[in-house]
Length: 335
Ligand SMILES: [Zn+2]
Ligand SMILES: [Zn+2]
Image (cartoon, rainbow, N blue to C red; front, side, top):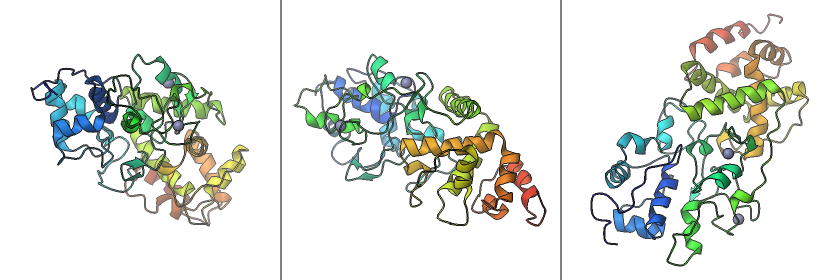
């Protein structure tokens, strides 16, 4: 296509607020009237493959540089569309494979997503002038939209497939300007027509705690205390999904909360769980966090968890937590 070789592409809009790199790239391709694959082959050539990886997590430098050069967006603006921008906030060490803390897995297999790692808010997709996918929808502790107070979805309600908007244009003929990201890639269902349901919380405090965390992440306002809390919360999540049958923290908390206990897949982790499971488990984690000492003391007294479990395999333990759990180190001491 004429014009794609000049420094700036003919159409070179910048990413929308909180937009994912993949969403921006797909919209750029479609705005030029090209399918995503055709557009990427024209720009990057067949040699540099874009979609054989989770590009929001593993965006290569050449892609970042090219997007910056061709759209006029700064490198910082482009980097900010990637999940790498969460390093030091949600996770602390970059890894090429395996799970990153709090980043949902797409379970990519032959360019298909086999997991349900990309969530969406039906109301956001309805109200967007041009529907697009948010970076925060890839975050495991985000289970509801703080703007519209509705539960996020993680799959098409019509056919059950996960969202994979980079494949939407495969269902269409050559001219793709009318392809919307809100279509299900598999059956064409309009994902914005998914029901908008208010989230249920086990208590008001839990709702406030989780909503505050999501909103602050979106606003880039998470402080060190919250970043440390996320480390602790993640350790509790691991204790809930553990295969160690002696750790009964999840059952204990469900019991104390009077909540139904659902079977957790201990081969999975919170990043691989569906949105309903995560929302449920996060209620228990938030319940612990809002009143940590008495609730943990009761769990230890009830033998649902031991001091050893609270620190085992917890490498980035925040200083306050290390000091705090020491009071539970003497198992003979009555609580
Ligand atoms: Zn929304
Ligand atoms: Zn569908």
